[in-house]
Length: 167
Image 1 (cartoon, rainbow, N blue to C red):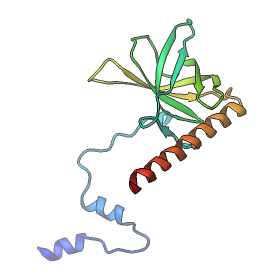
Image 2 (image 1 turned 90 degrees about the vertical axis):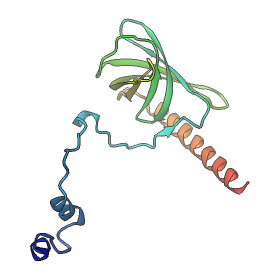
Image 3 (image 1 turned 180 degrees about the vertical axis):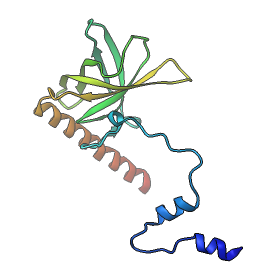
């Protein structure tokens, strides 16, 4: 019996990665769900998680002129995700105008359009999480402002973490 099992176990070689032979011996019982291609995001820019930072809010403006308040959960130079509570009808791939103020010494307004990539609902509350990708219309100086903000906040978080570790 042991010889049959040993014959079924491939030997490790340079041309057969470990993952491949492990998957052949222990196949997954449930296939992994893959996200649709349009939701796969290859990030070009660092995404800043806002959970340990002062809140940053944005306003979304739909085609019909409705203003929607959004609490930004994370932000990068390519887009943002945020939480909304009102039940405004929104749909994926919808183009929205988005405006938010970056809190520099002199606050800077960023106003552009963004495509709604996905809407996630929560079972625990009536809040929905939106993922937005900035349009090509985002001007270079605005994208650079977002870069600077993200880097500045990233450095602040690193400094806080170091201070906490040394105290």
